[in-house]
Image (cartoon, rainbow, N blue to C red):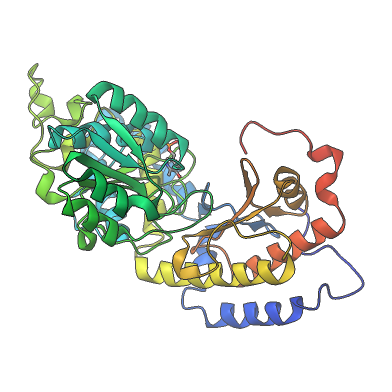
Length: 427
Ligand SMILES: *Cc1c(COP(=O)(O)O)cnc(C)c1O
């Protein structure tokens, strides 16, 4: 692995670098969670600013997975569904995720993908508001959210009304009693801009609508508080900031007050009140278990459980504080060192989630040239260089190092190299 950071040179880099590096050092020394990165395994010298896409490997996960495979599966075989608590893992791991999104126990289950649970929630919400046909949703949402909403709308005869978060209050006021659901993400997956979950949930409730939150980029990065905000439904990934691993199962939240009414479309046997009665008639569980569908990916669930164990002694507020500090310094470093690339979102870290994006017509080449220097960010079409900070593993020195590497890439025109012209499947 090549050493990360700025290219070797005779001078000390741009004049703005020294004070930024000094401050990064001070902030890292004073950081209350400075021990956290030591709990994760990252290749030496790599500046990994993509933990918002696939979080780093927690040090305890390889042994936990080996135990799940060799002992629990290999020796315990089918008995492990009872003896190792596999059957209850979706609720148990759900509560561990819930702690980080302000959900009291008994409101979150883990087991399917975010895409599946989004579909469940769209249809369930429509069924909870019969007679109302409108779903207000962000037209710039993550594509899977829009694709599934469009299918749910065909199925349940809904009208999707587009509104960016800042336009939502006006649209809700205009459509009022027709609105069944407001569906938004707290953090924009492209620009990092964050919206006010409590205020927008209250605005939805004002007109009698439900609020569904996609917290894919929030959990582990913001201090979103679902119970306090009065949210109705929420979903999120676990392979991003929570480091659950590639393909780790997603979670779904149903507020306690709705659990006897929520009527999801996928009525699989794991959501049945008494699955082993083997009853041909569907009777839903009377709690959040009714959001379970079929047999969950147990090995991935156990990997996620071990990953969450890494954060047992850490609160969402602590993660948020560290994330905000890192994001703030990243914005400052980018503004000072690469002023020609405009920020895609706000500059105020309080208004950002766990990543920052800058615009460049050569964004793909820039991201590849950074990777060649050992700085991993990602490209988001059409023109974004996205740099994620992980409250768990990123340091203040990392974010300044990444901005310096970006400066060096642009100065040497490395992003225009022919080797960076071809796009890979996953960007
Ligand atoms: C990452 C992400 C997803 C991914 O959904 P999967 O079903 O896990 O592929 C969905 N929505 C948002 C907002 C995301 O950021």
